[in-house]
Length: 258
Image (cartoon, rainbow, N blue to C red; front, side, top):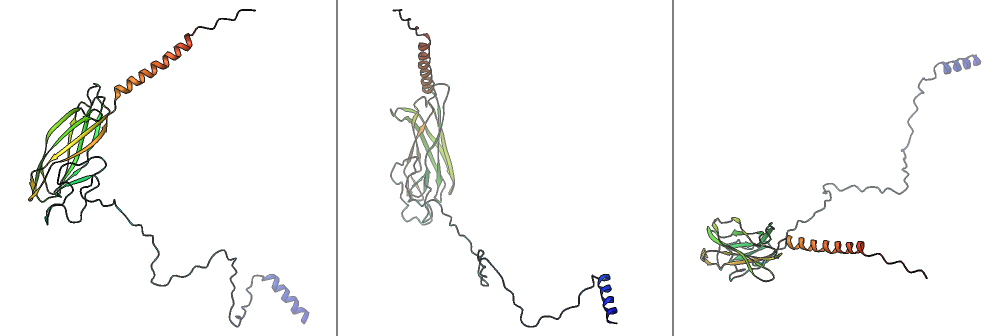
């Protein structure tokens, strides 16, 4: 009987190989797990609840404040009353603590005059050449202001007067308004380095504060095309003469036989 049961068990194992194995009883006791690391990756530390994520704070800074009345690099100022604030004028002029931009000067806190800007345009006529000059004026008072501007241009080396434009109107400048005042000066010629000037003449007083004219100055370079052309022609002539001399030089006579 025993050998017969053994043979039946072998046949059943061959015919039904995929029958699931019987479930095993769960192991008794506390399970144990072991994590094996090589030490190359640090374990992250959990963040405490409620803490904010870190962030980089980059401060935004502007240009350094300049004292009122300081001049920019493109011009100079003239006349009394420049760089002074109005005496006791609460509500008049520029707000307390405000400073003008780097290229502005102030007239008793009522007007702010920008530095001169200029652009030169050569002409085919060697004696001509246009220089456009402009500046900005800002009304910091509480009143409408009427003013005039004058422009002139000199040779920077010989200080010879080249052109003048007078009485350019600056009419009805509203409180808080900034306006560009410009003029075209002629006869830049071939002087190359030019000295340009502009004077703003305000009314005698605004809101009970006396005002005086302000002058700004700047140097301008006008391309001296005629001088450059003459210099290039002289250089080419010199090179051509040297080349012709080397080509047309007589050949040395052959030495006499001994």
